[in-house]
Length: 177
Image (cartoon, rainbow, N blue to C red; front, side, top):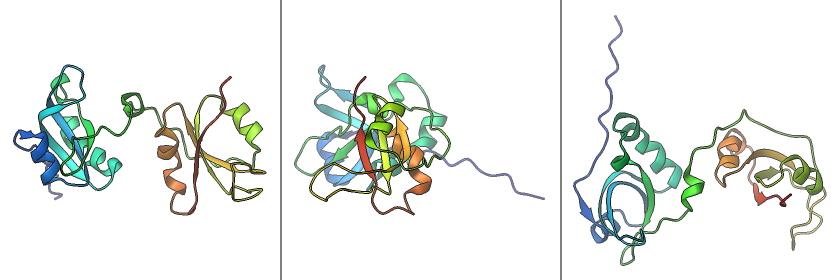
């Protein structure tokens, strides 16, 4: 008979000051909840850590257990980068953190920049197989799109299945309409 799977208890630190977080989790991404901050949101006085990792995505993935089990407004997860002797830094604009539905894996035929802009206007794109004209500027003949979206992170999420195969991935914003 199969054993029932236990639900992993989410990690939640004691309340720590900003300096304590920066020292304990130096050079790591930390996901924070119950944040006590200045009115302008620029200075964090204290918070509780729900996950930490060397990469932002891994820290967010690890915070998922907490987020799914404890979801209230005061428990909204916010990623910050911790550096010793410096204030915690929220390294991305909040609008980039909102989840955008990820489409199915995508690998287009080779397209020119003009065709990419026409197909994905006002979007972030991840490009591979870039046929560069030279290596000193942006110009290229063609490239394949492996991810696109309105937020900066969405193309990476869509391109994830291809990131091991391609060593060089370009990340650009297409022209505005």
